[in-house]
View 1 (cartoon, rainbow, N blue to C red):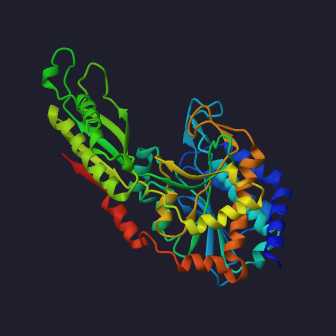
View 2 (cartoon, helix red, strand yellow; view 1 turned 180 degrees about the vertical axis):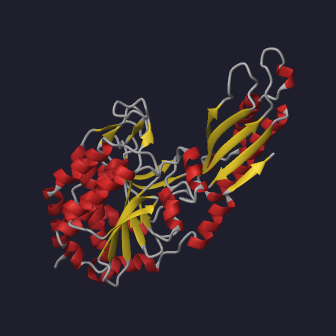
View 3 (tube, rainbow, N blue to C red; view 1 turned 45 degrees about the vertical axis):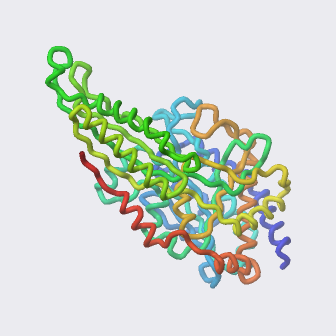
Length: 440
């Protein structure tokens, strides 16, 4: 059958089932869960595959939470994985936040609905049978790098090793048989509709403990060692490093004090901080991290406190793969989005754990509109549900058709010319090198 005819069948299937796709997006939006706690969200995805697509061979708890469906396993061609992220973010100020402040102001509910929309388009149309390759749908946990103390407990209990869901999936071999991977993100694109070819920062996470000596703050402060003063000096020391960072490296440092002491009339002896160090390349990230650690340790030293810095392997910068972008761009045009409605390239100083995947296999990570307001803020809102959920589903489903049509000719050409930035082994070695505790 003609490839464009297959694409029209995919689009028709998505349109005919748009109510189910939008409804699952709404359901997940109204029930946000933090990372590695997405038990109900995973259940909702599983039920969708079973009830809407009649699929029972669903792998659950693939990385503590999350699930995976495999189709076309009998085909000999490349495997394409379509991903969606399960977790919400903390934004208690948002009107739709739940009682613990969780919300989907991250837009991940749109991702999951879009991923399921791709499945609807390929499966209900029957087009997947006409393609020469394997297709996986993976609902991934824990993209937002938050609740570090909770994740530390999971790690101590042996339930996870890494705090990011895709880090954990790579470690467990979930991408060992995947050749290419696609996903998308929601974004306020202003008067445009889509952003393609984004790049981003990577980061290293930190849990920092400043250890002082308690004393009565009113009658004998001179007998104590003020760990809160150490933390404040440490933050100012990092600020003093800013002129040493190159503009092109896009370095960022941000921290929060999660414990500032115990009671107000005792000199703080136990102060805790969580922080990120971000940068555009692995080299600049390592350099900035060394400077930040030096500054943190100097703050402790200045007042005679001790310090423990627990390094947490964060995410790698997201890489752009132009050969994949070309295929996507044609399919964005195919569904009626014009070139002047597309933003070419985006510079994000935030981070995505999909960046880790992009170092190992060819990937796509476009950003679709249909929302307004900055992500993770009280101003975020879904303003065009049909576009937000259906446009990315159509675009990615049609991209899968292109990659795997005609003996997977295009997909095989991309893979033949692809050179990974890291092997899986090199990647895991890098993570391990940043998984350590420094004391001073």
